[in-house]
Image 1 (cartoon, one colour):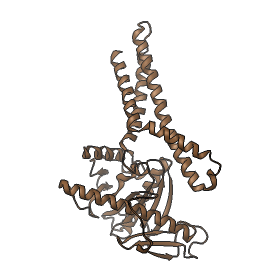
Image 2 (tube, rainbow, N blue to C red):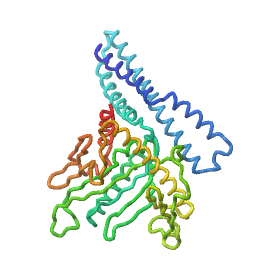
Image 3 (spheres, rainbow, N blue to C red):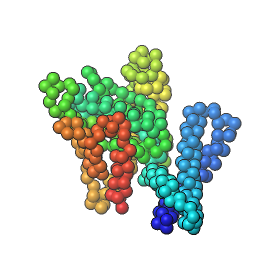
Image 4 (cartoon, one colour):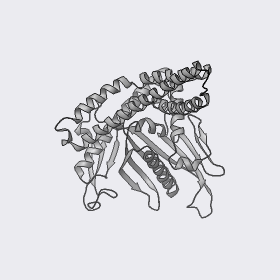
Length: 367
């Protein structure tokens, strides 16, 4: 029993360390601030902002309470194990071992959050998928990836909103941009940024030949405002056009869709999901702000790596993950080296193992 007491005590120590890493004392203060906000008389005047605050408060409370509950359960089990060790007449070892195994899994699951300590990891994410060359086959692959991420978001209870979509002429998608709103959405999805390669027998090929398709996935954190990046209206070209997808009854009848071009960088953002031109412009500027902030941070990282002699120019064709459906079955991440033979589960949104493997690889790569 002495060995079991030591194991439970290690689990308890791990929870103490996690409290510091997750900055739960700081988050407790954030909870108090947000609770005070929600009790203000004019809190619901701006419903969109109020909903965001309510979601943040709920997420923080859930995170803190999960740790608190688990800490109590481990503490109670440690006390039980010590009492059982002292009392030779009653043997509860089997029950304590069972509870320990259950709690160890819960602690390991909570530990996953400690891997997401990046500057933007807690933020919402903007995801864009672009089909590579290859026509219908590549466009179908882009749509498969969209479905995979939407399924993943659904499993996480995150809210997704299609912002812009360009359908393929026969099937699939030329490109799609969507917003993922939820705690740690960017922290999870940043692992998907890069080129994804698919190898399969094409359903569009009458001769049933094997095809290789590529799609580029861009993931950026949603940034409200930045002191480092200011957008000058003079640097923008704003075009309007007829929306061709989402947006309600006025779609295809009014010029509500907006395309914003940032002239100094040539970054282009198109939004057509909202019902009005004004709303689409507002969302487009928010996405542009996020893209410019990401660009600034990438340049800083590039300079840092150049000084260390580690910089490699990112190319469109540099793959991060391969999905092989013929002649064998395998999905393999080329950075973390994590792989699985269950490609069907992955394409149905089972991505947590890939996300965790990437975050652990990222930690070890930086250390």
